[in-house]
Length: 602
Ligand code: X8Z
Ligand code: ZN
Image (tube, rainbow, N blue to C red):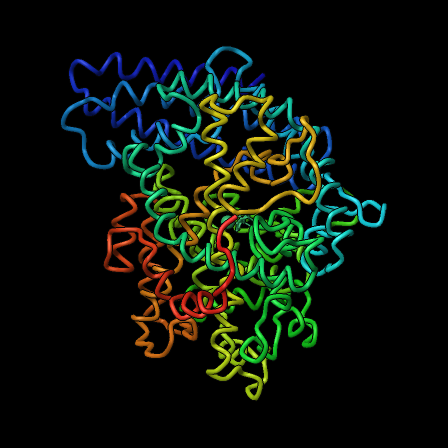
């Protein structure tokens, strides 16, 4: 009740202020409007974050209601201010910050709702419910239930095609299917909100958040994909050949698409876990595996996080605060349901930093820890910015920071932190293996990173109707990734829902951008560090000069258009696939030799 009263009063104040002052001094009116809104935006964001944290780390009906309520309040406010911001945006002679903040107010909403009473509640309630369904989701293995984080790890290590198939089908049936109707309802409700804000649909709103016209952004992603696609195609052909050799024609054919459950990951998004299956004889034997090293040296989840922090502090960044260690969720609690999908938080917009994970001692989670800490160090670096700038230069930057650091996890770095014995550092003749191991994660991800939102953009625009959710998803997975489900999918399937970011409504193009950006950042960092060897052997661990320059970009937050931030660190204003292609150039050549006689494509 209290919330409704205060929101109503606030919205009256927001609309009244410009009306009174407009005629006399519209520039000042716009400025006052932004100042007032910014304070409330920050307050509602913090309240929403607290409720969301409690929900995701303790799922029950009460926390679900609490987070939905806080989410609805924030959405109601954000939609109202976006509509009001549009009225001020045309005022001539506005200063830089007022203009930029007015623009951000209109583009930063991810899940809008209509202004009619109850609409924001409906959106927030559906959103919370779907998150919960995903968090509680289970598959089966040999008939026994298996939870999300366990099944994810098992898909990486299990090599039995029947068991892989069982896990894949049960996860997609149990988690995705029951969400379908609620998801369709949520799409419709969000679209109604986007349309009130003047967008064609929610997808158009998502594409508007990149400091350029939305059509130009869509074209940019298409251009980037065209740049890197040849690398994916070569990898696909090679991996299919190796899978065929291992499993035989009955499981994996010599031509056509790859069976999705054979690639070491529930969503076939990163394939590094099956490196052992595709490693070439000789050059492919790296002599170490990060999972084994962590286990041999007796690492536990806490020590893995400390290791991740150590990289960032080696660059000269301050250690994480004491509260990070007290308040984070590192491992899955045994007594309740939680959302295990990894995330990074700043609960007070200052330094109440936390991660929420269900860490397992393996290489995947060691990389993910660096990814999440990248978010935290970014959040703290920009914490002196005003509330509307408390964000990455764009969301792709936010996703790329930790990954850039993780690219520096080279064998030499593993020696430096005591994980690998110096005698075991792979010699130069193992470079192909090292690059292939990296490509299995980085290159394999590219079409997946793109297709999730390609699918959603069409769902939001109505080109894909709820009745076609299943088929359109499978078709797109085939078109972009060249993969097929391990068994028939019914008309009522909703396989998209079995991927976290769909029920959670997290835009995904950010990860595609990040996959490309991280190679630009990494290349620039290695250049700054004066690295002369092959790029993939470079680690900028311990380099304070790189750290300083890195932090200068991070401190900018969202205060400037993203090309400015990119320029500050790399000297370029263009996002480009060139750095990634250069990193993998020797591998591309090698793959194409191996693929001679194979029929590429599917
Ligand atoms: O969702 C994530 C992070 C949290 S922002 C763990 N990632 C994407 C995914 O898991 O699908 C990181 C890589 C791609
Ligand atoms: Zn992330």
